[in-house]
Image (cartoon, rainbow, N blue to C red):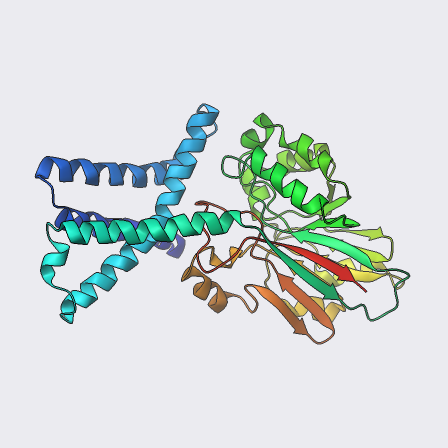
Length: 362
């Protein structure tokens, strides 16, 4: 049995079974009402798995949106319900709260519902608050004039982040009057149908600065050729293992590591030539950061991690990546791994943030 199958199927199923059992125990209702509540909870879990197994593109758009939001939000809410029930079990074992708190209890039920509701109302509001991150980047060589960038990653447009949200983000970014916009992958969440039916490629033409972007792993979920065409129709300068000279900047766009035959950072630097300007590497997934340092890249911008989206997943990300979020310096190379402006799954940020970086290179 493959480890990923165990992680993403058996572990969640066991976790939700734990939730169902505890919910049955704590609810102060007759059995028919308990069965109804647990059945509705189970339906949300079934929707989550069916979204992955059968997809959403064959259904009406509004139905697909509802199924995405319900199913994927269930995963995040379920994580916190599991943690809360584990905490309550521990408190019962050490006799801080009575066992009756978890059995046919109005007080227990209202406490659990209230805590979970508070967390996820906060998480939703916090997600919608896009944090502006000002940044000054020092070039080792003189520039004729400062260059202003807006850098974003993990937009995840589709059933989840839709037209109205994209338009709001466009307004935020245009107000910065950047010279260039850089996107470190995952513009599309995974469904080309979802972005095409909303005509989101048209919205990208509302940006008032040129956009240079790379693929993330989600563009490969969408389909490589479909994603290439969308980027083209959106007027995005797609850098797939290619180099662009923009004024005094040299932008290295690396293909996502989903492509096992992508070019190395050293190969991209070689293509940049000896007279390149200030080099910015766009590499979606922040693995093997030492490659940029060894190749002499000035600055690397990555995304992908979302910094776990919610605590404590962020702590797991810290264990996986050398830099799961934020700035890092290795030798003369500077790095920034963004937690993303958008998000996958549920629209919740707990212990993390949605951000866009406003950087000036001097």
